[in-house]
Length: 250
Image 1 (tube, one colour):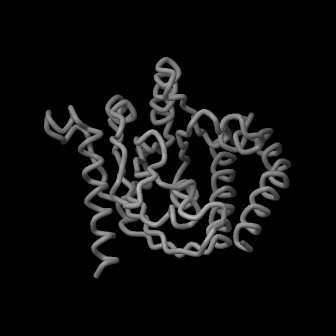
Image 2 (spheres, helix red, strand yellow):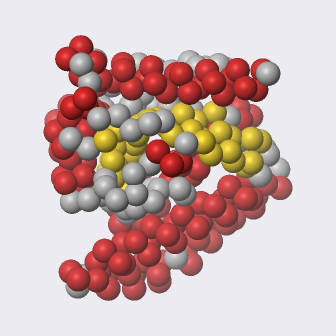
């Protein structure tokens, strides 16, 4: 219970007290030559805040394969999704500007949605095909402007008891990589649901594993792999999740 209180208190205080910072950085970013530095400061500020959330939540994080993440080019991050803490854990480690694609309902949350938009996050309504396409096109434009994109292609959080239980990846998400030629960085996350979702409404101390797979270059895949790109990427994440499971069992 005490962890839940501290996490909620910290998040509320950050969103409120961070408003002046957000305002100042907005003014600075209006000057084109200062925009990138301003955006990067805002990213680092939020990453610091997310690391604090992880600390208060008692997350013991193990990171594997971080050397696979390109540092000097935009990429498409894709991962399995079982918890809100997937975003907290992974976003805190992005080396450069990165926008996450989130469900449309989040865009209506005051303050949080403001921070997200300033950090190039996009919102998608999967029930609206036209709006979904517009969001994907915006993601393509972000990549072309040097901003990485992260998406959870299941289209929602998985609720199975087994970490390997994933919803099928939606192929439309991968148009961002197909149209831009950017690398795809697969992420496998284990244990995140045990922080909160497995025993709502309380946050509990637990171990979380975040593993980055080797970047996938669409141009180097076979014709069949390109045709089922989502399925191919999901299989790569499944391999990592199996290793996590085998390691825990051993």
